[in-house]
Length: 247
Image 1 (cartoon, rainbow, N blue to C red):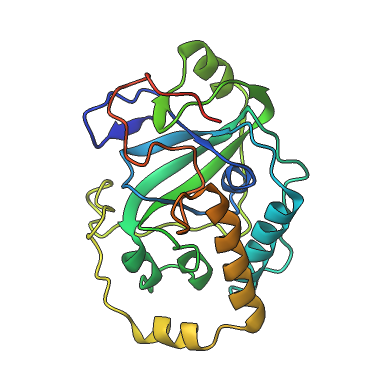
Image 2 (image 1 turned 90 degrees about the vertical axis):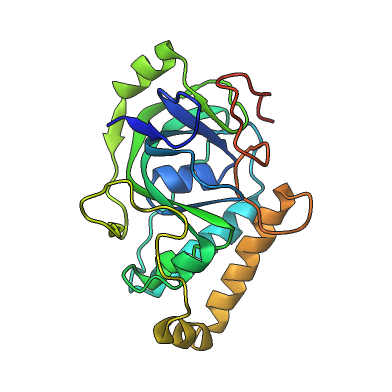
């Protein structure tokens, strides 16, 4: 499946460089929401590349604890995390089926509570159908969303394998006849009675896990706010493939 552009850049085989452990958690289907400060510029397949920064053990533990707790909310208690979090590697891909605001996500009664708990940033990219490379291979990353080189794409597409997520999620379309209808402000975002009740009934472990995940993410933020966990320019670059390299 290809990707549909939402901006003026011709994304042929779009890729996003992310820090670990978030990159692997997304490709393994554990992470369903990619939080960003800007809306998704594409709908469709998005390749995921891990940046070169080796994750601290404390960061890995914080994020694994976070997902353990939010999956437990929906009765999933046997999460299997990646054995390794490789860096400077192309890991696999996901399907970005839409993008909504954080307010819309956290009040979306049609999706599991655990998914709503992933909403921590201004815009939430909705990810389905994870696939991972059987053998991740080394490549350089760039900032923002960029196009994979053709030779890398040709090698990657032959080596991906579908992943069975711990709790498969299908994000319902506001307009079933429009596959691109999931976009910011396409959903009602007024607080629902169920979401208010869920906030009041959060366990101490869940509250601590959310705080730990936010603290882990702020190491990449310049202003101390929970950022996206990607190597980004802070805005969607509209210059094709000419980006600075990811750190």
